[in-house]
Image (tube, rainbow, N blue to C red):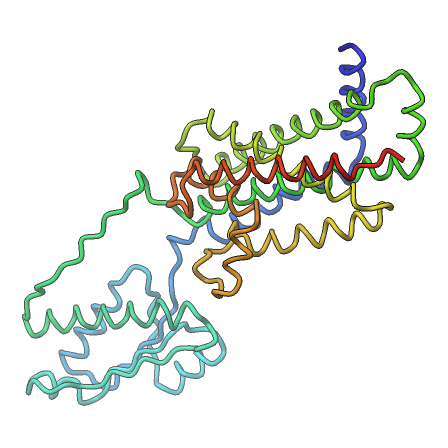
Length: 360
């Protein structure tokens, strides 16, 4: 036990002195959080610059202008059609609404009238979000002018205990990514030791090899806990992301996720002879998982032919389990399913790694 403790402390010191390892295992996930948080944390307070062209000055046009100006998320800019369309082309407007000259007589006579709404098709939010919002706003204005009652009223009720923001969904995914990188790239250290014949030399000593491996793996688990604490604390202090679920469950999933990817990392290095080939294979494995496992993007956006790939990746289940426990998001799979798949990956990769492992 004393030998194990000394090896553990030595590995911790070596890890702390390795600046690149600290960057990739600790600083890199923090940078991810800060970048995604800066992009998505204030998404609810965003506003749209909307151009308004009033070609009529009758009371109906003025009523429409006042109603559009009262929308908190709209920053209205009034001008001529040419001026506003030119601003839209330059990217200074998200949409331009034109109130035509005939709007007053048409409303008075009960005739339909076309209200052109121009938008930049290259900006998806304008076409998919802003234009339908403008249509709903104009429909509400029409009801107010014609005194037509609204029969159907949508009563939206979220099933989650609190409204979740994009950063709430992303933070568990970033934690899952950090655990994956810790497991896969942390094992590369052993390839370096094997190339330098250090493992072979240690084999000639009374030091049990499994004590050496046990100390290495224990350091990875310690680093996983440090990663988790760092990511959760920064998420809470900077972006007010709170862990809703049980901390004990989060800890259990983190330990299981770390075990899964540590096993996968040892499997990868057991198949490689040099550190260069191990780095290449690790990148081949980690990049598809990072972008296809649904930790950053909703899986609904993925084409159908990629769905089977997503279902085969352990990172999918780790991210899903963390997300549903940490922020109680709607799960892709049940929590027992996520845990069983992770256990299966951990056991299978460990068995294959032991089968192909080489000390020299």
